[in-house]
Structures are given as structure tokens and as C-alpha cells.
Length: 155
Image: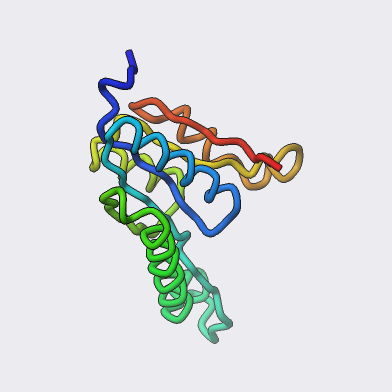
């Protein structure tokens, strides 16, 4: 059973969005009150391309785009720096940057970090948007081995 006494490691899934900012703020406040450690995880989807290739046998294989991967890495670093600048004085923060499907990477980092609680924001998509993009928060909540706190979109 979860209680404040056994929440020592909080993992916050982050991205550059207002939904994530709300989750970060809530997670940092909770960590301060509980004296918990914080880790941030940011996952970038793998950038692929299937450019025209004269040989049809080769065109089936997606190719990595190094420039996009570099831009994603720089954006992640910038995001982590912004969060550290805003909250890092009061709390020690560990960073995890991963490449892959967000829900898979969040769950993998939660295991590696031995998280007692995962916090993430939700975009609040419904209908066709939800059907097409799925819900990272829903998938994480369903598969996590620790409690998951989902911070909803607040206007």
C-alpha cells in the first residue's frame, strides 16, 4: 500500500508542453513535502525516413535521420536545463533521455530508477485523436509496477 512514508523516488515524465509543466510543478512540490528524490524522463520517438531509393529492395528499410536526432537531443537538453534552472536549487534532479516509444521508455526508466511513484501529465485527447495517438498516460498507468499519478489538463 502506498503511503507518504514509502515514496522516496518520484519519476516525472517530461516533454515541452503545458501539460508536462503542470505535472513537473506538482511532482516537485510533492517531492519537497515528502523529502523524495526526483528523476525526469524524456523520450523522443525515433526519427525515420523512407527516401526514394532506386533499388526497391532497399526502400523498405527506414533510415535514421541524424540531423533530426541531433535536434531532438538538443531540445531534450534544453528542456532539462530549464527544469533544473526552475527547480534544481531545492532538489537534486536526475535526468534520463531515451529514444523510443514514450510509454515503453517511461516504464523502463521507472524499473531502472526503482521509482515509487510515476507522475505525468495528460493531453486530455478524446475521440479520434485518442484513438489515433493512443494515450501514453493510460498505457503507463495500466502497465506500471508502481502507482501512477496523472495530472489532468487544467485550464
